[in-house]
Length: 121
Image (cartoon, rainbow, N blue to C red; front, side, top):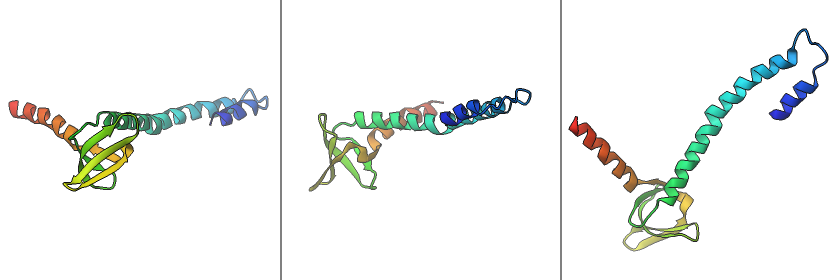
């Protein structure tokens, strides 16, 4: 993208009256800004939320995996990117932390204060 801007600057063929290359640059700047606001910034925010989700995992949290399986966290490895999830009483799954899509315990804890505020008003 920036290389195209540089090419536009270099392609200025001495036509100072028209200002064609500067006009193109002025048109491209809002497009770059819109691209940043609509694509890059939300993606960064989503990645930060994902990192906090993974870093805040603890034992006995109810989680939803990306495969749709619901379970309870048994242990979280601090040294490795690994977590053990109990799906049933006799079934434990060892997986990487990025396979967890939602922390249901944390979501329930966030809903309770909101419900209490609605009840108070």
